[in-house]
Length: 282
Image (tube, rainbow, N blue to C red; front, top):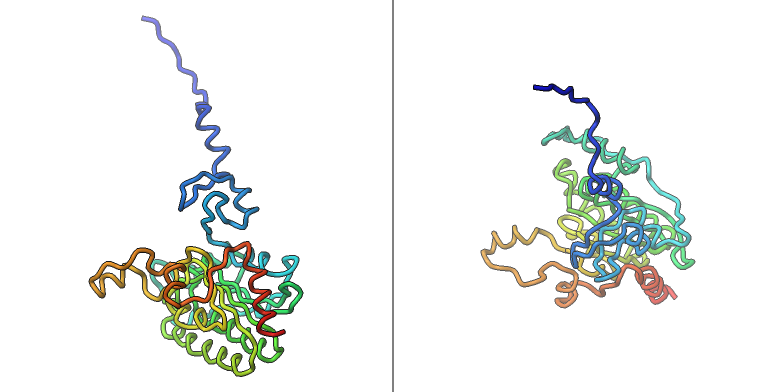
């Protein structure tokens, strides 16, 4: 019997596997129409499916690039960061969760507050980031939005807030719930100063954010298909023991029932807000 020595050569990946590795992350499947979209095309179209107009989530900084002239702004209150008042630990320490989000996104908390121009008009804008602990509102988010409202009242500059949030931040307990009243009081003072506030609700806008500043705008507008509500549909169904209507808590349902003033596609949002501010101010 002849014996043969097997050489330890590294196995080469099949051609199909090699192609898959090289193209990984370059294509995205639309959640709505299931079309396969070239990632660069999706980014160039502001994260809107070119086939069915489904609106993907847009990051806070990209949102500012969309709304503000030349994509330029001056950030306000960037130094504010959470102190973990409750020393909270769930599956990981809250401080670790914050640090991971800060390192990944390059921001201290779930909202960016800036000063810039929209169609040549100076405004103050707050843009929320869902990827930062679910866009939840803790003490820092509440403080930044409150300061934005106070600056708007003082400088007579319109305020635009883009909401994208899972609600109040449970890791800060009652401290996060206090922000609902604090922000609402600041917006009431802004209203007394007769300075316009436009609220933009994106997918998702839920919980304490919906229960406070997201629904207090002089004009409340939403992107198509955005989920907007307080509690989630499953929680509501379990509570009332009834099946919810089709499309419940989607922007179109809320507009039909009088909870919104308009639904505006993303690419038209900047001009829509600009015209609205002309109506309020000029």
